[in-house]
Length: 426
Image (cartoon, rainbow, N blue to C red; front, side, top):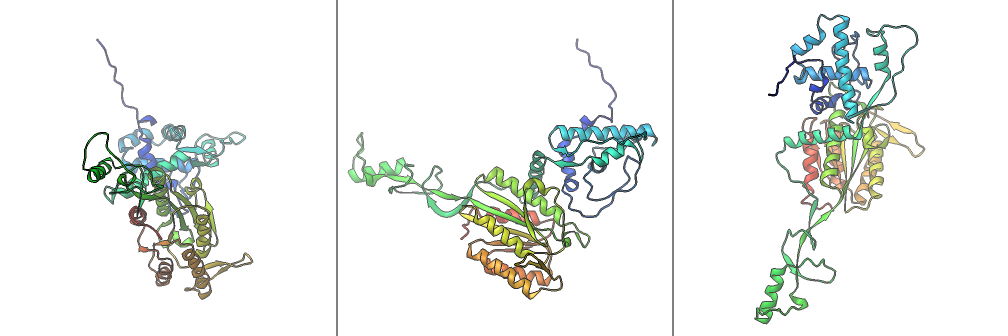
């Protein structure tokens, strides 16, 4: 007979924590954009909690908060770990958080950027001046490609959850062509067509012409019919994100949701539209392209909104790609307030809609129109000057403009992207 020995559940075990659920709850922390925030005291004995922290110490505190808020850490488990609040109980809590961090690293979601440096001399292990806190603050963490892809997948699932079921595929256009997939009717064969024969229609033509069903059948060139399929095209997208300081002002973080949308759109393209490409451009006082791996730790700043620089860089990136469809997706919450002069200096004016800045920005918009690149703008504010500017952009490039907020931003962008499955961009 087989016997089983049961032991009391140990709340110190990090193996009981669902890492994927935890990582999903940590998304806002991992994609932090410099938005100032506060939090409760941490297990290292320091009551100060600063936003924008990418140290292991800050990660441990975020994990503790996420476990409590998600319910994975019940009050009973937390009480068992903390005990009477003495050094021993805090050491047990610290050990658990260390084990969770190590699991995230071992599973490939996170990586550390430098090894811990132990201070010289004799210092206590715990407490605000202890070795553990000093090491935890020195070591920085970062998301791996696997971690970024996972957050993109979770963001996509969350966005599509509010849209209902969607079918993914390549971008369809109204044009018909001969191919492997039979999505439309048949047509007479012409030189150069893929020989994807419609056997039924071909034999029918032969019987109508000869009036015979004898085998072998008499087939002529004019009897041949080929199946048509919808012409599938590839699309190049440049997502330009406004990261001026207004994106985290007025009590709301608008940049972190924008980064989540970028991750979701990237995951969608990589998994469902393998022929498509997406590039990320940040614009502020100037503009620069960043790799997808650097998006997670991108933060806001500098202060102003150089929309022209963002559009110019996006247009250059798109013109270098040989795609049937090209588009710029712009997420912004402010009117243009900066401009790069020919000598490299930055002209800035945040008061109203500066005529000089507007003229030069619309010149770049016109260049996008000339290159047949539509600009679809998603506005996170309803400032009168911004609305007026976006109307001009949409009119010139024949793009679309959407008034949205941080809650619906992802749904608007993904729906706009998926609509191109049945529409050709000209």
